[in-house]
Image (cartoon, rainbow, N blue to C red; front, side, top):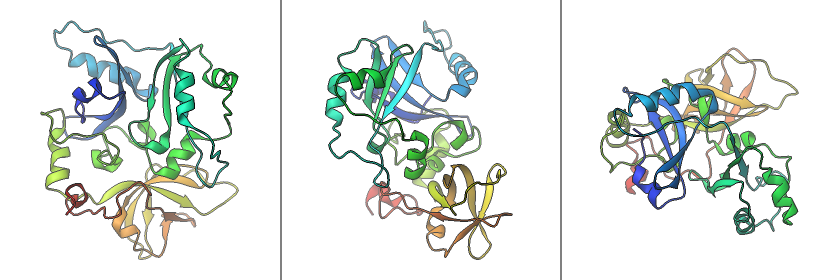
Length: 293
């Protein structure tokens, strides 16, 4: 049912993947955790709880499996702030892991399976105050950062705002660069489009970080606002933003050749940023980066 090989979660602490529909479009991104041999936890955007529950039940068939939404857990993220923010060079994730193992209110904790810059992901009982516990253990944490802003600066989407269900293709989300897809597992729902994108088609558009002209405030942009290059040709769409930082689906090779980008209908320019976690030789030509060609 998912783009990744579910068997990996037997040896890995967590697994990133996507639910696709039958046409190969993204429905929801998810992180899978194994709790024990008979219990697994699926983390996804809470706004999709009704649909995801129905989606899973539809494929349960007659198996003796219980699928139940959970409302008594919380998700926490501990990460190092980027270089342009306040950063504690002495902060050590090993200390965090050591202290997390000492509390009974935590269900699961693991490095984020997508990218090391996203830090540690923690699933806990709702009444467990993770920051308070860690600070009482002697760790110096700051709550002034913004996880959403961190993702936008990295160029990593998450949830229905960044991955509109039924609209975007798997490689639009950079799933292949975020450890979220297997090309050696068996068939799954929507597999044909993901396989074609990897082996046959050119992947021209990807989600990228963008920086808008700095302003005191921004107008409300229409959904999927078009982005034009310096030749006034459409080169992509703005997906979401927080202040001047945002995510855009762009023709990533073309936009790096443009002198500037502009939001259609607005006197606002923006700059696309090539993420430092992308391969330097990333190409739209049949994903040559995967094979080292």
